[in-house]
Image (cartoon, rainbow, N blue to C red; front, top):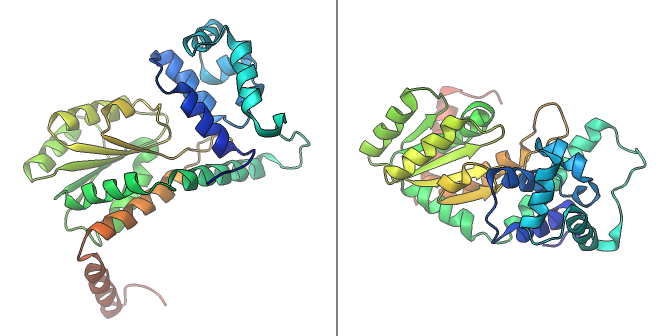
Length: 284
């Protein structure tokens, strides 16, 4: 799927540019910022990029050199040449800030659609989640809503889903309990800002032998190194609080893939619907 001149292509080019380079944590932070601002990345000054990424201006220069460029101006020229038509983003002010946030989320969804052109990673994730009994689903702070929504629907087709949406000293105990009960995989929703205890919990989970499937905002997220299969879905950053339409939709896509891998999923759904009708559960 090609989005001529749009953010999805720009994001893909940026990610390809970073592949194969051993970046420091600070440099990964800059890379993550560029991916999140893919549409206007070629037009940011080194000072602007440093401010957006929360790093020093010399760090931006070292980042460009680490990628093989003479300096940041050379990197920016490379990014500008990669933009189809060489045009700057529209600056006519036709959209207000609320509309801009919606359009940014539409771009995120288009990018997700382009990633799903290869369904193999999601299909693999669906099989892993379907086979895990029980299935622990982890999401803390900003990601708790995504994890909770997934777990709510997953329980309708999966026999044992365990939501891990509270941190603290009991989190590892709950991971251990899932492992003792026979779990083989763990699903994690990880969104910025990334809680340190989520990173630690994933490292611990992998140490117990669990296969970690993660939905994260970027392949540069700090949870990436502790994930066996990471599925990226960008968040919107144009408002005071991040928006997460793409991660939510990716969660529903994972549910579909899991249902495809559960032979009795349809029967369970029909059983639930029949019970709901008998109880008068929903207003018609």
